[in-house]
Figure 1 (cartoon, rainbow, N blue to C red):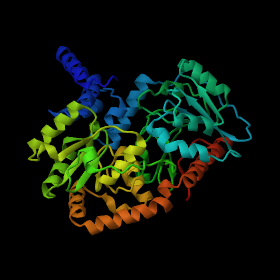
Figure 2: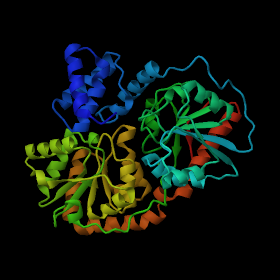
Figure 3: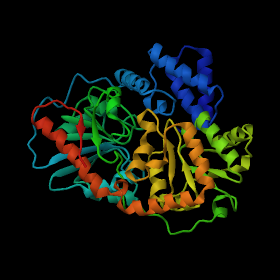
Figure 4: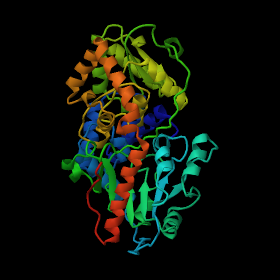
Length: 475
């Protein structure tokens, strides 16, 4: 949690040496290694973790498992076992079948990210666009309360914002019940700081998982997951404990007011060479797998003078990535690392890149939207799991489906082809610039109407005494 991954890894290694059969810590150890881009025995570690989940009843934090090459079946098993062990349903259920009678559907958004966080960067516009004649919105928050512009904007967008950071789980559940929330929307899932135990106390008649966590919660007390038919095709519904709500364009909210700085960055400002094609990937480093890196290095090997621009998560991960590049015959200086920056500046510096190379099995999510909003095409490969299909969803919604590769081999070839045919890439960028104003991905009002239709359908089923079921929202 302190991002001291090198020390954490040493402690995990020592723990395993003392007691080799501690299956439950394998996921944490592998995630610490992934943050460092330490890939020694990576394939064996992944295989061991999957075997432990399948055969040894091990529990691993599901968020850590998203970046492990695995199947949708494995991820359901991981989540179900994790929830059963760590967040079992409470015997004291707060909501016991009552019917509320409100003039407006009361939506409770449940999160610790009502601050300068990726979730709020995506959702702020949607919160502002809610139809207040039909929906009452309540933020149930345990977020930092720093007086930032984003925080002030969020506070103004809800009917109520209730702070619960100092309250115990039972107290939070009691509060939600007293508030008579019709639909509780959990924006955390299994991400950092989540409070899944509150949902296990069933404080609301309808409980929904959305946006924060890209997968099933495996929880009997979560009724719906909001998705679309790219991230969860109909034939994948069996891998989700929730009923699937399919929005028509994309499941991901976006804010059409995100500011891009006016500053014009130069290559020298960010450490890029004066000339040469710039591939980039600003995903967190733990999402980079050895297989993905192999492909990137082969692409660099085929495109003379090209470079790969990455986010620098830490000095250790950057050093390890440069070492891995050299081991694959690519000069270390062809990897360039970006320091963290304010969001407007970060969006502005995207103009220096030519093509965003997505990662798999954990795609760019907010990061892909950042690139597309900034006018940078994203190349992805379609995977099997929710986390590996998000970029494809975004590309469909922005009108660039031809940038979705059907295989890793096709992805490599497409990256090379686009780099050596500048007219094709220029045409894509021109279309992206035009589509940014018209395509569904960045139409915040359109998206809000779709998610409101989903909430209405859930609520109508509930009021009619019907159990949750799959919902397909029409465009």
